[in-house]
Length: 347
Image (cartoon, rainbow, N blue to C red; front, side, top):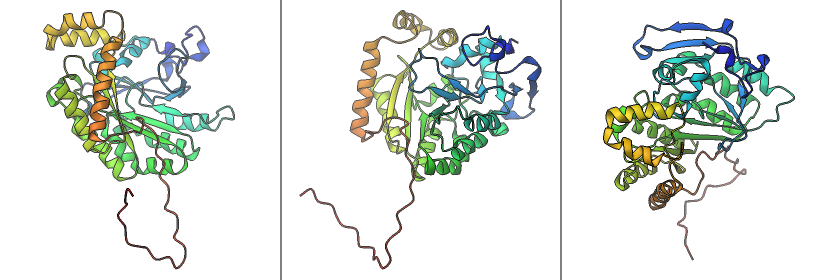
């Protein structure tokens, strides 16, 4: 495996830029049903805060990714290409060969304490899910969240995992001292499509339960409606059902994102499509003929439909993942008597 080439920056010619070396890798398998067929490569990373390339479309500059590879096994995952940097397979290998940065919490705490760190926003779950199944065993996120809380460093999390609720208290504590943004990814609510496209993830309704629970604890949560899959989840009735379920969960917002097929993900997705929906292959070849993204007219159409439905169901106007800080109630003056609630009037 080409471990030395997993670098912080795109310039792989610098030997000292490698995040870890081959001698730092410990490979493990666990004889438990939830990890059947999965191999974990435990490494001690040299860096954990990564700068997003300037050409990226992402609206943030820094990320933390404690894992590489993802047992969620989403057939469309754009991060599959990153496994090729390690000479690992971008198909089944991405789903079953998981790199675990076991020293992520201590490394992050050290980097946040550096005089060079300016306290910028850190995004998590933007490459692979930080609350995938491996997190249940390795428990890296509590240490990561504690470090961010202790340094009052703003952050956001995007996840398909219900395990985030395990860290609810840490999230609430962080929200007392800094801005915390949480988004859950739910692209559709069709159970049959979910079973074939996202076989390793919690069901969509379980993810919406996460949104509901976070809202009950004062943590606003947006939903990234991603991906909207052309010809499989983009019909008006399907979009309506998904937005209606998102609204019922108490989400602060819904943001649609049409499927994009980057190299690495494109080949794996198209192979799946050929097996499961061969009649759609030619339509996809035409729709994505110009590259990784669907045509602008198609993206605009889906966005308009979802936004109209969101308005109908009363979601918004908060942006997806917008942080919401929990504040302690102001103490009441001595001798103050609480009045009965009154009906507000328009006049």
